[in-house]
Length: 89
Image (cartoon, rainbow, N blue to C red; front, side, top):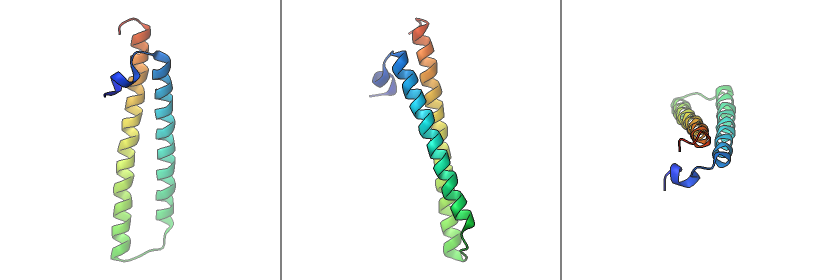
C-alpha cells in the first residue's frame, strides 16, 4: 500500500503526518549531530580509528538523506492537504 492509499484525502490527517515527519526528521538530525560530535572528540588513532570514523561518516550521510526524504514527504503531505481542501482531489 502506497502513501496515497494510507492517508487518503483527509487534510487533517495529512497535516498531522507532515508534522510528525518533520519532528522525527529534526530528532534524527539532532541525534546524528550529537553522535558525530562525540566521535570528533574521541582520541583514537590508527587504522581502526580511520575505519570507524569512515563508518560514522557514511552513517551520517545516510541519516542526512533519510532526513531529506522525510522533509520531502512532509511537504508532499502538506501540498496534498491543500489540494484536497481546494477540491482538486
